[in-house]
Length: 351
Image (cartoon, rainbow, N blue to C red):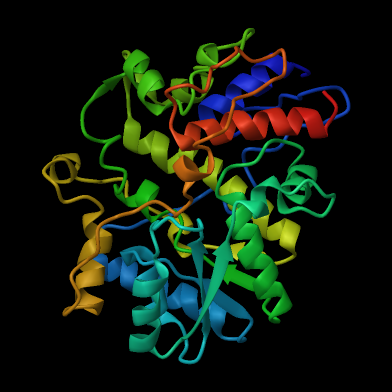
């Protein structure tokens, strides 16, 4: 179905295009479900069961020496680092803003590598990696492969994947999925949501704030809604999981390496929501981290670093007629990015 307004609205709300919708007759839709992952996941009930599964997974995917690890400073990838063969290579993203101190996960990642006898390599990310206008720029390569605007994490994943490819690796291993699968997104699980409240809470940028013609899209929430209340954990395990997996697949496939993440193969259907709401989020994963790193307190959770507030501080907003003037005012840097990349996609594709 060709529906530019729906596609734009969906991207702003979900950072992905929902369903089989086209921006135009000449541009196909990007699938929200990727054939690289099985549709059935295995239920995990304890930290020891998760450990056993991860050991098996890591042996399968690392035994040929062709797999590198994407290592942040958090607990999810630290667990995988513990299970990597000695001497393996681990890459860490480091966003650089000249003259400004931003989140730097490479410091903790280097310590993890030293503790586990891994070789640490840092991939520096700059605003120039996003704003380059030449045909081989990361943004243009990713947009061309996806046929859609791209998630803000894709540029840095792509750059790291290209580095891994050039270094001789076939796969890049991520710790993505642990938050959605095991109750790490505690702010979204903090209370029971009606569908109306959850649409407002979950939607990244509400289309009516940005677009002159728009849709407010509710279809992705409906399978998880009973009597007007949303099963948020189920939504995160399924719908949200496909959203971010699609971004990882696109970035890695564009670079020519395989994306793999063990956490995406599991789920935790019996999640104790009361325990999460009491402050013990992602408790199965945390228990495993504490077993493997008994002398290292778990670091606070941080999203994948990308200093959008600094990069978009002086952005003047979109200029195309689809957008309201000054719609970016009072938005966060992350929200500004999605408006910016949507406009750039429309320009690059001549829509």
